[in-house]
Length: 250
Image (cartoon, rainbow, N blue to C red; front, side, top):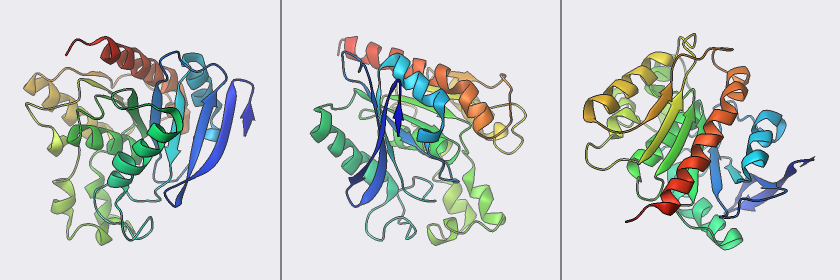
């Protein structure tokens, strides 16, 4: 799907479809964002607010599609019987970016909304050296709660709700090893997920882990009305922090 600001295309990436955005004027340092979608599988190619932000900052974007996998390191047969969504991102998506654009971590950031927001946070918490820059909009952090609501995929990945809870982003925060650049936001009227983002904020603060968050801005609750409102802030954070990582003296 062509836009004046860039072009969307669909590619096959290790046996699965992915959407790819190429800005008309890529950033001089070639920064790439991996976007993790939500449980309703909406595509950013249909969301101009995100394309405008990507174009403004010149970032390339890869949007892998893993069905309702919750981006876990558990096999989700709806996605793939042999590889987990997390490994798919860490190995295959990163490998494809390396082959396509010659870009390596830490020039790659994670961004997600809802299911993908918690996935981005959790993957970054588990692989902080590979993904030191992460942003999440309306992250559905306590996704284990859906196991009481008839969720169709989680019971196939976890034996019970407690096992799923133990795998959430908040439980993967390590006091000595964390992504250096963390940003997340959640509409305070998002009654389902705001509480869990507030708990993540409190845990990061208690451990002294630097982070930025916006849990006050409102505008639409949970969904793309709010995601679109926060798109520019999220992408701006990613690009600024990717730049700081590039200039970081090890």
